[in-house]
Length: 278
Ligand SMILES: CC(C)(COP(=O)(O)OP(=O)(O)OC[C@H]1O[C@@H](n2cnc3c(N)ncnc32)[C@H](O)[C@@H]1OP(=O)(O)O)[C@@H](O)C(=O)NCCC(=O)NCCS
Image (cartoon, rainbow, N blue to C red; front, side, top):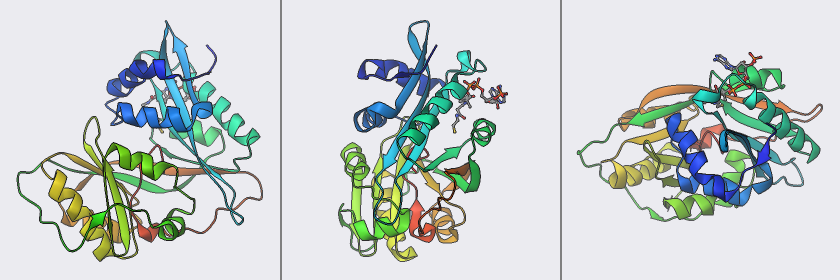
């Protein structure tokens, strides 16, 4: 059972895999990776269906920084765990990324995945948390001026450190987005809860306008918001809007020898784009 490239025809298996693990990804989320990263979307098939996956999502480099590969969707069906599928997929994916020159590889690890990643040379960078707000009939008022979504490429590049021009339009197509003075945000449907993120803002007031805009539309739904808890302003804002932490993961990085990460502004990242996207 060697890793193979995932195909659009595998979508039903991929969705079944996510549902078995109560993951939030939808068909649109899987279609995004299959469309944008067909060469880095890997699976293992058993008994005729895909039972394990691992995907690389890439961001281009610039004259000052190498490109980034973000690894996600590392998932094995509960009935097929402990047979080495995740290890084989990760070894194959990491070797392919190394060959293609991705000298910086990152991921958000669950406690189950972390030991495997450590064996492959990933080291812990910082915690990342999932916060949740339960559906509430109480109306949240939109605050201040919010316009239709546009990215602010300079701000996003300063915050995230890589260019997300490929992925942001695809996230917008699946959901909602907004722009305000000092920041922008996107949100999309999820299988378990509606997802708020990414949200990038220069200062807390801008993030507050964006989060209020989102909750004015989606406060009647369960909402997930994944954030970097070292960003105290992000935690404080999520808390003030009724979110509570429900899961903690570990952001990990694997650097080729001699490579350093470009500077970034985690204090501008109020919500990440997703555990599978960074
Ligand atoms: C983490 C996960 C992907 C591992 O998949 P798998 O195909 O069973 O993994 P493998 O058989 O290749 O085992 C790889 C390593 O995972 C860990 N692991 C596997 N099964 C485990 C178990 N039952 N308990 C604890 N650790 C386990 C071990 O470190 C193992 O290495 P070892 O064989 O040297 O002990 C799978 O458990 C899973 O889908 N979990 C839920 C989703 C998740 O947390 N994914 C990781 C996202 S970052």
